[in-house]
Length: 245
Image 1 (tube, rainbow, N blue to C red):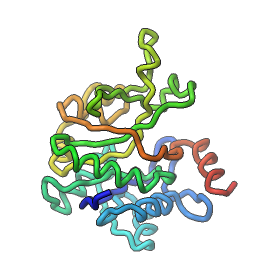
Image 2: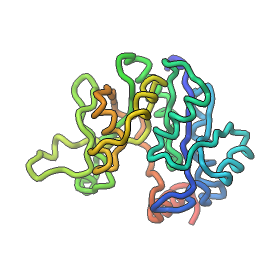
Image 3: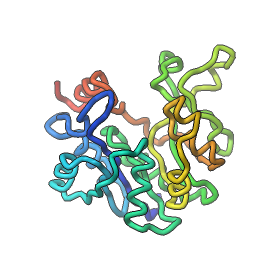
């Protein structure tokens, strides 16, 4: 892949609702945030920044020699937190920023590079993201698995948690992967607008972008990523994958 000038920001808060303190939980001898940074460091990103509201997370990141930016504790999404970083750092409008969420220890670095490249190749879009095919039928009705539909040009059409009975399941074969690339201009537009009704109801921040008529470009991930860490059950699964109990 052609080298793209992009920056990774890892948003990480300490007070997670479903798994408090998860950024610092131990997984195979390393904290969760260390595993995420490890994935980021294997990408082609020009720089990596941890954005947090926690002094504990800041200390761990700085021990890893990772630049850390302290942000407000009041952000409602990782995207809003990253927008604050972009403002603090005063990045130019066309700077590409990848949101590598702080609970994705098994994100292949190839996917990180891919999403940055996807946005670079689609300059008319403000946001790029990835998807992978759903292979487990149980995931179709799992509200924790966000489904995405997109057209033949790769433009996202809808994101949803639930599939209605009237909808053919064959049209919902794609699972959204929570990694994003944005331009600074798109981040600013997103963060300056209050949360929308659909975003609040579904707990899907990307629907705010839809309501703002922002184009989201999407393609299949080159490598399906492992699970994120959202719950205690997820944590045990990831520990098993990484070789610890």
